[in-house]
Image (cartoon, rainbow over the protein chains, first blue to last red):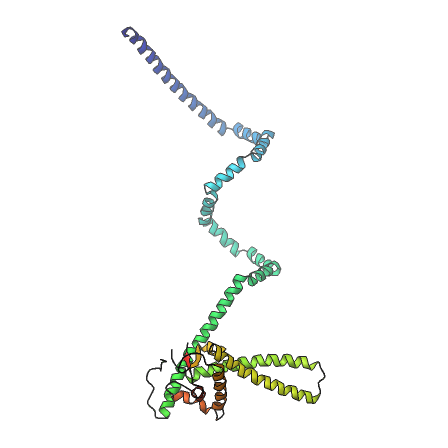
Length: 187
Length: 140
């Protein structure tokens, strides 16, 4: 086995050299490619090329194929799965820009006009009628009315009991009878 | 539960009286309108008026007697949270006793309502009609 050692070492050195050369050449090639891409993107030719590609029949057909295919559903699934819409809505609603837009809408005549048209139309009153006649609303109104009537009756009851006590004190005083003790109780 | 005084009972009675009269008025107007389309002789009108008056009396007596003898509470009593019951057993009075109480109520009202004044001085707040019928009015 000893006579094979120089050969093994030579092969190992050769392999290392090969890897080094490949890495160096690869890095150079990548740098060159990126530099070329930068140059193309910065040049007028790059912009023109992109314009032509986008205006081409190929781009249109590609887009049609994409929209026809399952990619749209896959994208929609991922949008839902990762809560993209919620995140987007949170970002938009929390932004000062949204607040500014809302203030402008409220200040504009657009809202007044929309409200005016809504009030003029029959649809709103149909909705109001539907809501007013719904069981939930009628039940709530009934409960509220009963509660109010009960409250009024409770007030009358309290006052009448006070008046009872006052009247009895006055009657006993007029008849010179000793005042009644605590309110009389049944057995 | 405590015995109930004159003001509370008067309010309850006023509510009952209003209810009795409103219902009688509605029925009377309905019957009057129905009869107005018929040509009724004068003599028959007098008879119908007498029947209407008698019906009103029956309606009033029945109202109190039935409510007192069933639950011990008229709608007015229920509103004021009071109840009529026997002074010994605490149960709703019988129909006979309720009728007696109503008669005694009229009797107590005759001498310018003096029969009710005993409520002010009686230890159990009983009116003349309560004493005669053996009932008391208590809070619920």
